[in-house]
Image (cartoon, rainbow, N blue to C red; front, top):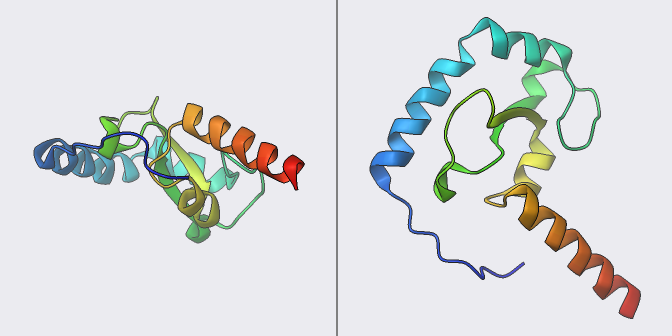
Length: 103
């Protein structure tokens, strides 16, 4: 998917939110989510060391490190998602499906 939007990252915002994310990773709440081992995106079960924290609205797009904006996900899903929002992911999926149907 090409970058069709402008990402003007605020370095102070990114640094501040990454620090908050580090603090969230130390909470019992986060450790409980890791222990469940379920990827938010693909629904598969993984050992805790194979899971990462993903910001639903990425920090680079103004997202915050809050319980409502972070989820547990596997490394593959996190890499596939990159800087996309849920809406971007749906649009990408539709576009990929449309391209597949044209073949």
